[in-house]
Amino acid sequence: MNSPLRVLCCTLLAFSISDAQQSSKPDNPPAQVPVMNGGAGPCSLELTIKDLDAKPIYAATVKVHVAYGFGGVRKLDLEAGTNSDGKLRFTGLPERVRRPPLEFQASKGNLFGIATVDPSTECEAKRGMTLTTRKSPEER
Figure: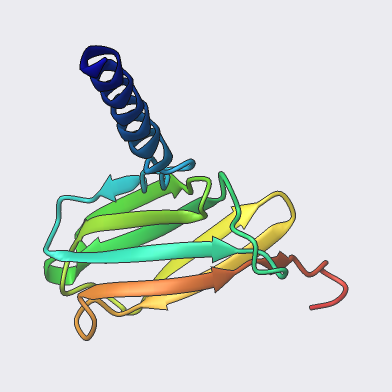
């Protein structure tokens, strides 16, 4: 009589442990943040791009032109796209740039936005950006 009861208890215990392990797994792991490395310095910027409804924008393109070094003779043109959470990260930005602040221009379709960062005052920056519709030439 002890043998069948022992087998039943072990079976129930095994099922309860496997069920607990399955329920602890997250359904949607966070998307990996794309990183664009400029390789020119220690500074970085993490951007979060959203629309007017505060929803993240997937595959928005962010561009920046960086002039640095003596007289601004060294130049970088960086471009990256956002992930499904509307995030991306620029690393390897120089601490001293010519004509600060840097302008990060984001766009997707007819949506547009600008974020500015001065790496000499804020080397590890985080910014949120809301994209709005572009103004037509008549509205400017």
